Image (tube, rainbow, N blue to C red):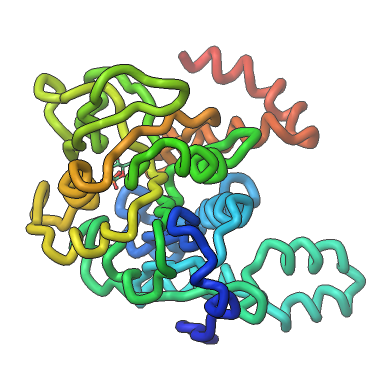
Length: 313
Ligand code: G1P
């Protein structure tokens, strides 16, 4: 299996590509997933399924729908199952086809990343030094221009993918850094990066002068929490290289975004979909119920269990 596939078929046309084109998505997937132990003892948390679809697949599909050309997974050596999962498995597909299960093989092939057709890179983050450090690990593989960052355990379901919406708004927003935001209750702000807004929301965009990582409720500059989708000016890597450890002794992505805000501009983007915190058990359960609700085959199950759920309240 190839870890670093070099050779960019699009490189010759670089000069003609405007600098705001978002061509790279970075997926930080090195975390240990301690909140889901023992489930995550042998299975990376990004491969935990929402019914039959691993979290990472939702993230990959969102990046593809947004026209991303290169996907960089920042993983950990103990999580090689992610590499096995994301790549095409020709042996498995052939076995399935040999047994007449062509439609399953077709679906698998369509979901997987084919290194002959798509640019896929795996880089390793050996130590848990923070989200900012994870993003920096991808620097050498990123294409020129702004980069997207997708945190797969923030699952966002909606008619249009969150990253597609953001990239669509990015050129018009006039800010180098754009972060997905949603309003949360004051007692929840300490779980998030929080925007320091400048003025009011215009359409879906809220200009900001900075961001604070996980502030105490009484010190929060706003209730605009950042969820795991970012479109960041390419200068983020330089800022991360010089970033001192912040909250928890980690290199915080939030701190480098805040540092670049005055130079390249920063805004929040209010996305239209529903976000599920699949890093938490309750969020995973909510996502599962929402996903089941979209599929005919589970309608009866949901109806059967509604009285039970109400009885437990
Ligand atoms: C990370 C970021 C935080 C952001 C959150 C979104 O925190 O550091 O700014 O609000 O993701 O899910 P984590 O949840 O990894 O602690």
